[in-house]
Length: 166
Image (cartoon, rainbow, N blue to C red; front, side, top):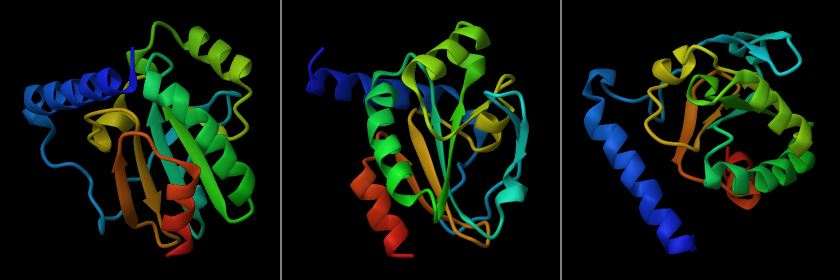
């Protein structure tokens, strides 16, 4: 599948989810406070967004079956390696949309993902953040406010520019 076909497919999925899920209401947007949540990590620890208050946080919603998400992993890893002292990068896997939690854990281990991965097993956080397409990324400032929301893939350069401009 070429890049144009992938992009058209991504837009189709986003449009389908947007117009078929009107019960979600309006999505979390720039300038709003990020919703707190607590999820289990891929290493079976519990992590709350509230624990990260006072830090810049990047939250990326993704799945293993999303081609854009897979391609984005290298960019997220590059960003993480460059900014890990200043920014917490949290990848929230939409585990409720996966074949199984075990397959997700195998994917994470095989991909050597260096940053924290949270497992949204019941889809509660995705619903709370009103995720309508993946990948979706939120940049949250030290006060817990959404500074930027990005629908679709991000690059290390894009994230760095947003963070450096804060």
